Length: 195
Image (tube, rainbow, N blue to C red; front, side, top):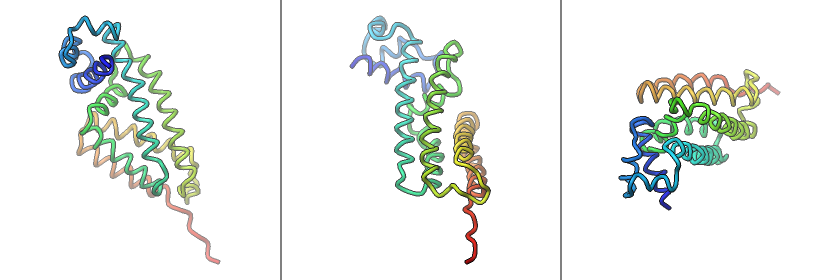
């Protein structure tokens, strides 16, 4: 129980302050314990940080599975997922931590974090591909394959997360509007032939 509370407190501190500025002393105080008690659960600040990455990956993949559950047309699911990048980031320290970990992990932990993130990206691609393959986006007038559309979606996700992280909400909205216009144009259905 204390380990989970430490993770929750650390997540908020890392999300709002960043890895370097967050101290184990503050995290311990947030939980109501003394700093040395942390070491009964995590051998270091690095270990505490790294323990959060698998939790975030699981949460993000669960969110993606729910977002692409087939309950509405996939283009609407994709748009809702893209829009949720902003709303979830603004409302949740978990998502703020997630985006910091994706784009600005602690330098000395970069390889470890990225190894896990690459697995996450592969799993997200599988979720998207499954949704697109069973949708009406393929075939389309431009003969774009499911694989091409999945890579396009992954690029949109990445681009929007970067824009939100470094450019802010207004730039995020402008980029989303432009990307979505192109995606919609690219996925127009084939014209039906006259009988």
